[in-house]
Image (cartoon, rainbow, N blue to C red; front, side):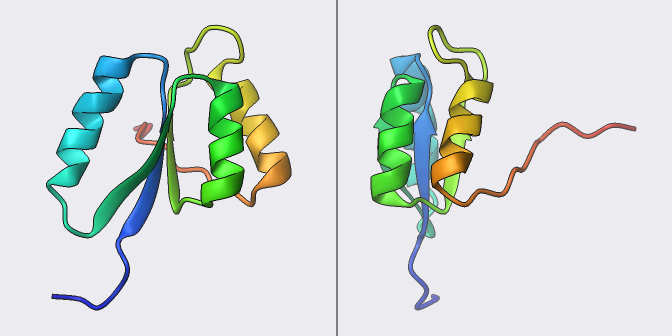
Length: 89
């Protein structure tokens, strides 16, 4: 077992059932902790500033402020690195 602190994740998605499911899956990994959840971009930006998570899992298709707008505004306030699960062949 490692003495490292668990990685922290902030979930930003407008679907509560999806956030709940992802949170339950993440809870099975002892080295990862969900530190916050937001249902829209505005809440997500505030939580990203206050919680300073290691990773933000962000829905790109949200009503109001979409994920790309949220990412842009968050990046202006919090240093970010982008990762994408999409691979091109």
